[in-house]
Image (cartoon, rainbow, N blue to C red; front, side, top):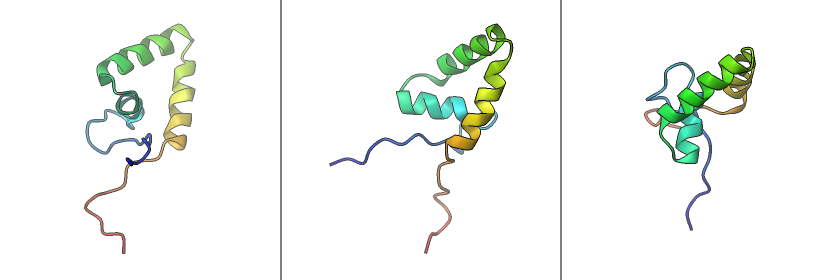
Length: 71
């Protein structure tokens, strides 16, 4: 049985904090589509998207560092 899918902000391939990359990886869609949709949503909602983005930064965990040993 496979492990359930988790939403994590990637360490590689992100532009700011990795929220759009995390959503794209979780939904299995192109990250450019998510970034364009987020930008349009932010512009047309009087920049409320910025507040949502920073809330998601706090809620979505960053992926673990695979080079650090967890003993």
